[in-house]
Image 1 (cartoon, rainbow, N blue to C red):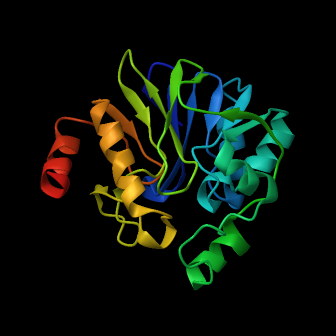
Image 2 (cartoon, rainbow, N blue to C red):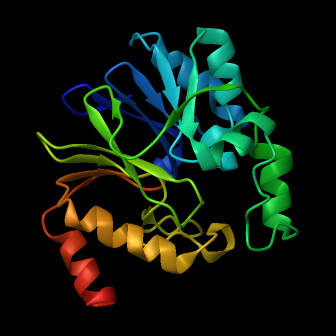
Length: 223
């Protein structure tokens, strides 16, 4: 577990930061894949957690949610459009090609059991010291978490900071295979760019202490 900013901690659950979850204040954000629970529970020994929230309910973010909620006795929060996947554990229904072998692999080996969602999160809600930002596209109900005072952003998979095949670091849109609506995701990229984040925490890839990289990415791809 690595401290990123005040009361913000990264828990990398696979090597090279290829899958991450985070603690913000007393809230666990995302839960890796099904086999991540041991790593996350070990990290939680050092932090008091009262709530678990998801950026979105894909297999590499909700995989350990049910185990963690049941073990630590904490509630699960999601957006309205992620609730069904989170509660059912059927997490690939919205993929452009849910029959693809990688999608089927994720459902079979990465996705965890469903768990009851006790609170629906929406734009402007407060989670700890962070504010919920609705950032749909990669998934229909994707949300991010932003703290204005130091401009820390937990953005899930709106962007990734790693090539998921080579693990080479660098900003890009998430893979098409797992992204419901690329045009809507681009709108969400522009939305988070307008926040001018300074510390950006990704579901995939190392944390970015931004020194102009996001602006350069936007200039190169979307100017």
